[in-house]
Length: 295
Image (cartoon, rainbow, N blue to C red; front, side):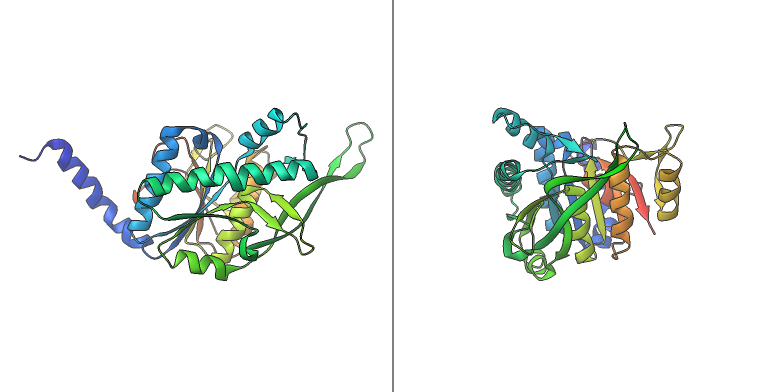
């Protein structure tokens, strides 16, 4: 006898079929970060979801962050960490720790989780095979005492200048799942720490991905009345930033979305990575799971 639970599961799979067909042979770039990375249950759910995507014919590309883990390691090593303009000031000593944590511990743990559930993940950084070249980031801030704008030196913090798509095409067209740490190399051979959202946007743009999913610690974008906003156009995003509705840490995410859409990505979704199976809910259900930003 078939149980009600089994019938329900079969119905869910049947309902997901049209969405699986929609994304078959399409590239989905997923920026994975936030508190979900530190929760064993959520990280294993994420790994299972990525394996399922690959088996369903989707080409997932994972870009991960690691801010909290970097902060913890710097504290353990008694290295002072400072921020300016929302970015970590990264001197030579700090960038060595950043590379150790991102390209080492975090990257290989994500790879191990995916492989544990039957995937074939390969861990790399933007430095491998010249995948991503970067230029030094410059930022200006207003001095609160003098009200004078001044340039701040962020050290070894970069932004993507070019992406070698050939490397990614070889990986995504195989049975491999790329897991990429957001480190890049400059034209003169220096290693740069790159914001993971910005890095993921550059990867998605180079691949003209069907979707870029930004997994965060919030469900998406809210209006001034705290009502959840299911979809936003580029023009609406610019208006909401200008009037202060979108503020603080959401601003750089939305700015990344706008820039990435201009590179040919079909749509970008900001969603809560703490929700179990958030990726599957977004891609394989009718109503999705986050805020979709589109042209």
